Structures are given as structure tokens and as C-alpha cells.
Image (cartoon, rainbow, N blue to C red):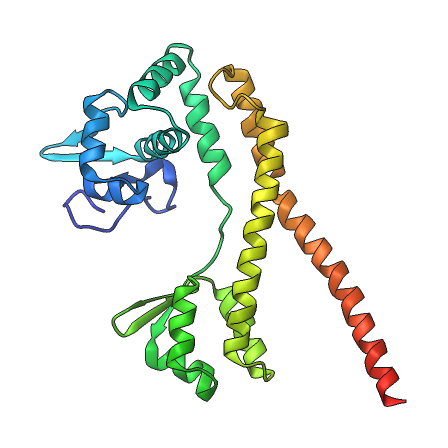
Length: 259
């Protein structure tokens, strides 16, 4: 998005940094997953600071987005709007709100580092050849791997696209690759639940964030940054070990059948 009002979404500048992102009201509401009327209501109740104005245009920042997500999280945990207002005011008075917002950014950023790939539907069919069907494309969209807009399709991850192509070119039916993807997604969700539960219980603590000091919030933020690569490394190592055991057993079975 530029100062001339041209819509480009969040304008992160040349470096795309989130700290420079800015949004119009409708874009902010969409990014946070809330209705525009709710955004206005939060402002009226003092939960959300006013935007910065340039002429007749109101610009919201990444900090507004972070606070909106925090409000949504607290609402989801059963807090009332009045309770959230009191909580935010208490955090502001104690100087801990900036640490809390920084903690939200530290805990939610950088998990997904994927390069999307956009092409036409014709190019996608040529890429996979006769192995792919319209039903496969529909299933891939249902699983969240691709987004179809008219005649163009965007795969959300170049790495996953290349892995899928490798399997298909080696003779694995695309439908079965998608079945495996569905299974992997379910297992990944279960693993994420387990790791997040461990962090919640043993790093954040049973009382949540409400009564933590600024220094405690800083500690949790540092812990989140330090622990971010741990699940990826654990899963990669354990999967490699499991594959080694499974392939060794499969090779032994193949050798026995040849005798």
C-alpha cells in the first residue's frame, strides 16, 4: 500500500519488515480475522489505540494488528471486553504491555518460511502430466496446498511442490501423495499441540500471562526464541531414525523373499 492510496496490502517497505507494515481499517480487520465493526468497537472502548492519520487516510500499524490478535486470544479464553480493557490498562500502567506485545510477536513470527509458486492451471497440468486429475487439484486446494484464483493457481510451498513432483515422477500416484499429505498434516498438528502444551505448562506457567512482571515476560520471549528450532530438529532427527529402521527392515524382508 502506498501513500497515493493504491492497495498493495501491508506495506513493509523495501525490506518487508513487519515493524513498517501499515494497513487501512478493512485490511487490518481482515488480517486479524475480525469484523470492521468490532475493530471500531474496540477503539471506542479504549482497547485499541487510534490510528495515525495522513489527511483523510487512517493508517494502522503492525502493533495494532498484534494487539487485535491479543484481544481475540483473550476473548477466546473467556475474558469479557471489560475484563480485557482492565487487563490492558493494568499492563500499560505497569509498563508490561510493550513486553507482552513483543512476546506475541516473538512467539508467532518466523514459523513458516516458505516460498509460494504461482502458475496457470495449464502450466500446473503440464508440470504433473497425465498423472494429475481435476479431483487431485480440488483435493490439494482442500488440504491447503494450493489456492486457485480463476486460471491461476498458487502452491503455498516450493519445497512441498518439488517433493510432490519427485514422488510423482518416481511413479507414486498423486492421489496417494495427497493421502500421505493429509496424514502428515494430522500428525504435525498433534505434535504442535504437544510442544505448545509443554511450553505453556513449563515455561509460561499455569497462571498464564496476567500477573507476570515485565522481566518475566522478557524471559518467556527469550525462551520462545531459543526453543523455536527445537521442535523442527527433534522431529527431523526422530523421523530420520524411524526411516533408517523401517528401510533396514524392508530391505531385509526383500532379501529374504529373493532367497
